[in-house]
Image 1 (cartoon, rainbow, N blue to C red):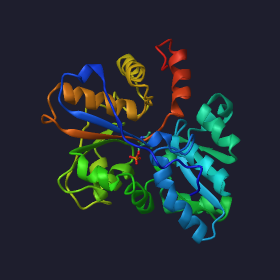
Image 2: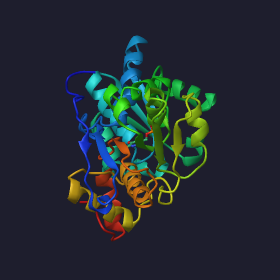
Image 3: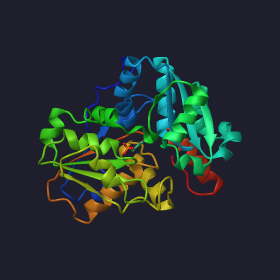
Length: 307
Ligand SMILES: *Cc1c(COP(=O)(O)O)cnc(C)c1O
């Protein structure tokens, strides 16, 4: 991918009042700064898929996602930037009349993505051969990227997140989890004496099997206590935390992924989970495009907004 992408980002030290009396050293890798729209792990996950699609002479990318999907937004932007047509198959027929009220979908449309809305029931069948065949009849030839973007090539891209220095310096590496592609790349590229901790943004017990498809090491752990009720569910406590964290550190977090991970990390630290003097690297996987849409929902519910 080209020079518009900012890949020369130094880890930042994080100083946060709630844990200042603990001796752990926190650093954050600001992958959210890679690109305004193709940010964080979505850049990493799309990188080799784009190369592959070009190699195969495909001119269309097709993928799946929900109404707030960072992956849908990133795929639309990647398509525009690299000259692919893009098709987004979106969960929820009712959204067809709400594209312009939804920041993610509007962004995708403005970047040239063709949006096809399907029912939740059909969406559950989206990986079946029959369903994919029907898409081929409808749209002709395309390069298929799974929901959330996770496949072998995505994992390979995520193996490039950690630098050699990171592998030597840090005891722990933490990231948020959606489909498990990002943590898989981190695990594969880590040193055996490092521990990789993943914080799922959603409920469910399927993740370990999904991750084991891509990794062979066992220096990793899934921390399931900080999903806040499920995907895209938030609480006032979480929103307050995100606002306080930004005010103190200037680092913005998104409410769906990175905010939950950071909340969990701070909570674990307060509970003496990490040994003294641990050096911890946090991966900021991006996702900031989702803040506007979440604020819209919070406003409707008359709840506190993300600043
Ligand atoms: C998509 C996304 C994730 C989840 O990544 P997976 O590879 O699916 O686990 C985490 N954080 C952010 C900000 C994301 O947009």
